[in-house]
Each structure stands twice: as C-alpha cells, then as structure tokens.
Length: 455
Image (tube, rainbow, N blue to C red; front, top):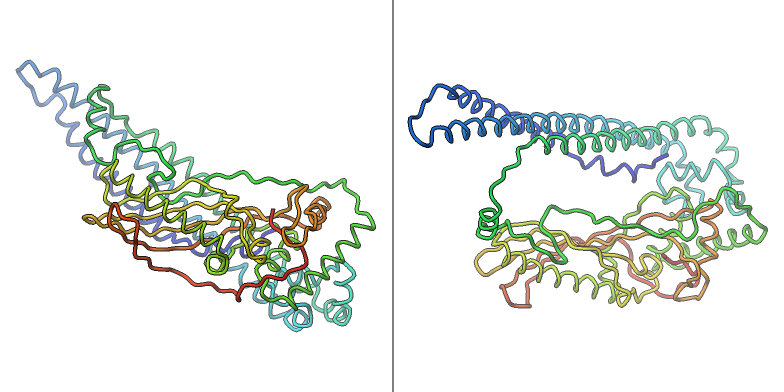
C-alpha cells in the first residue's frame, strides 16, 4: 500500500531524455558497425612485405574484435535504456491514474474531513479516509461520532477510490523499480561486453600518471555523479506481531494522541516536530521530506554543521583539482554524523536530532577561481532509541518505541537538502555565496512539553 508521496519521484522522471540516450547508443552502434565492415574488408586484402607484416595483421584483427565488442555493448545498453524509458512512461500513466482517483476521493470526503482535527484535515485524501473509515481510539471515536452517518453514506465509493489510488501508486512504484533493476543488470552485462584495453604495467603507470583525471584519489569526497551513500539504520523497537497491548499501553496511546492534538493547536512553532510525530503514528512508514533550509536558518548547530560541510567540500574540490587536473567534475562526500552538532532548538531536536549529512557538488575551475554548486543532504531515520530520553522533558524513548512494537506506529526515513553556490580563489578561505531555496514552514519554537524525539 503506497501513498502518493512515496511515488511522487516518478512524476519528475523524464522518459524522453532517457529515450534520447538510447537513441545515441543506437546511432553509436550503427557508426561502429560501419567501421567494422570497412576494417573487416581489409583483412587479407592488404599485403605487407616487411618485418611488421605479421604485427599489422594481428593488430588489424584485434581492432576488429575490439570494435565488435563495442558494437555489442552499445547494442545491449541501448536496448536496456529504451525499455527503461518505456517503463517510466507506464509508471507515470499509473501515477496519473492514482492522482485522479485520489482527487475524486478528496472531493467526496472533503465536507467530512473539514470537521476533524487539524492533523486529519491537513492530510492528503488517502490518509484522511484511512483515518475516517476506522476508529483507532477513544479520541477518534469522539471526533467521528457527529459525522458517522456521513461516513457510512460514502464508505463504498470512498473505499473503491482509496483502493484505486493506492493500487495505482503501488503499480507505478513496482513498474519503475522493477524496470530500473532490470536495466541496471542489463547495463552491467553490456559493460562486460566492452573490450578490456590492456598494455604493459609500466606503460600503464606512465599513462595514468601523466593523464589528467586518471589519478586514483582518496579522501572524504570522490569524483562521480551524485550518489546517496549506503546507510544502515537501527531499529530498537521492531514490530512484534505476538506483542499483547496492556491497559497501560492504551492509556499512554490516548495520552500521546491528546498531547499531539494539543501541540498542533497550541504550539504552531513546533510544526516540524508535530508533523513527523503524526506521520510516525499513521503507521505508513513512508519517507518524509524535511525543510532543511528552514532548519539551517532556525538552528545554530545545524547551521554550523552545514557550514562545516561546505568548507570541507571546498577543500576537497581544491584537492581533486590539484591531483587530477580536471577543471569540471562532480563529487560526492562520505556520510558524517557529528554529536557535537546536535540541534539546540527543541523543534529540530525532535524533528532531526543527531542526523547524518553528506554533500554532492558540481565543480568548475576557471583560472584561479573555483565555483562549486553544493547540496548538503540530511538523511536519517525517525524512530526511538531504547534507553534514551527526550532532551527537553526527560521522557523515556521506550514509551513511544513501544507503539512501534505493537504496530500502532512505524519509524520512517527522513531526508532534506540545502543548496549553495560558492565561488572562491584557490588557496583562500573567503568565498562569495549564493543561497538557493527558502524555508516553507513557520518560525521556530522552543517550549515543547510532549517529549517527541527522533532517535
């Protein structure tokens, strides 16, 4: 069961661009085919009468074999990319179908949702109906009692639209992810078809040493396209289907529901924290985007963490330039998690807590000037840690983690990004900075008493 935010990435895909790459592979394959045909015609037709005659024949044959390998590799790659482009189109069609069904559901239940709490009324239509169609607690029953008849009148149509939308989103994700995995496998196979150009080791070392861009570098940042580093998240409170809820569990669940609703109404400065905690309680577990630009502007520790990563990116850009000679390149940094930069505002303590960051950047060197467009990515897991406590209130994490064990709540990945463009003179620390993006949420707040926290 997927909601739209889990499939939204598909909408941003550009299958026509992917198809254009496939067409380039096809044209390259045809060009190689023409060269192979010409060279193949030379075998046995050109006769040398010299000491190098045998060497010429061997090199000619090797060249033909190399080009045939290139031809087969581009043919396989082009086919894989073309199939992936078509899968993207199919996935976007299913995404559009799901969006249409969700919009119809939204219109159908809008009068009912408007009578509910801010948490429900501000959610998307699928989450609204998921909440309305089944009462999960005392507060839900009280809130839905005045509109119980209205819910029953639309239940059949709403369930049908809800199923249509979630099925379409599931289909979109499945079609795209399956095709992507298949394309990656096909491209790997295509790569293996490419010829391996070898020479003696001493000559190889000379070529590598004297050719800009071939030096193997090692550091916090590496040359290559933007790539999210692998990260294993902890889970101290995994779902246990055999766990039995106690009276104390029910009472605490009601308590936290009341505290959430109260915070949403009375503490708007903690909108980020309440939004994530509400998502934790809705049990979907889908990734959630965090406004990292807002975090940067509101929390001095997060600002220091981001600025430190930008400075590291600058040093790494200079290092890579000096070591490789490349004047235009992309790079990706390692994951970093610094306890010294734990957020100092309650809103961001509860929203992100101690989170990991990494940078991706486009770098251009012109003379003695370097321009770097860098994105600082926040990437973490919203959950609760056994034995730990909320920084502000001292409430044990175990209390909220218990809900995950019972299946009443579910942790999820949080992510956000902040972008800056900086220009500086090689060897100098000062730089000019251009900010990209602006926060979308309200101003920060401090005095929170509900103990919500990210693990």
